[in-house]
Amino acid sequence: MHKMITDKQGLNNRRRTLASLAAVSLSLLTACAPMTINYYRPEANAGNVVKAWCPPVHSFVLIDAHDVIVGFKLSSPDKEQVAITMTLEIPEKHTVRMLDRFVEIDDGSGVIVSGELTGQVWVSAGRLGEVPLDKPMQGSTEKKIFDQTTLYGKTEHAYFMLSAEIPAVESKIWLLKPPVFFVDGIQVELPAITFIQTEEKIIGSLNC
Image 1 (tube, rainbow, N blue to C red):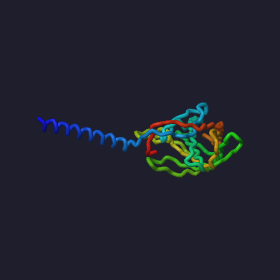
Image 2 (image 1 turned 135 degrees about the vertical axis):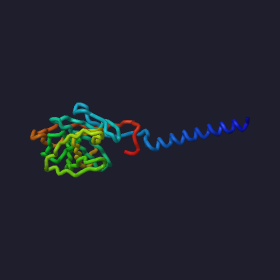
Image 3 (image 1 turned 30 degrees about the vertical axis):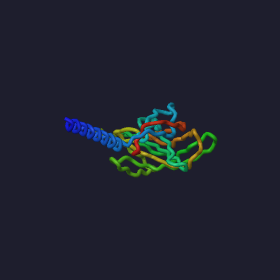
């Protein structure tokens, strides 16, 4: 009888150990943990404010410009530089051509800094191609099982990513002046977009 109880206890202990190991393995695979994120959140009236995938905070603003979805995001990868991201979802039969390759940031006190955009296009999973911004960006639409991954979701359209870096500006509020561009020959001048430094506690992925 004593041996049966001991064997049962041993079995329960092994089960608990396996359950603990499974929980640890799952935690390592998902690599999620509570964290505090400091980021720049665009004002809601600028467009549709959505969550970026990594980290998942409301840091992207999306604007519809003649059926082309234009996105903007600001981030501070370090204390010396500010990264400006501009994205374009361009459907089939549409083209976008940049008139101006420079973006400007105003810190609200009269200090204005600018950076020159460079371009990339989504080619396939994990592969990007360089895009010369002195030529039109051609749209396309392809419905398939695995749509193209954007920085904030999915799209079935041609997806372009433009980026620039500028010297860091000490400010809680930044005013982004988008570059001027053409959609199907129609000039688009978007209004300035306000980004406000925000702090948020999230459960985020350590793999970002």
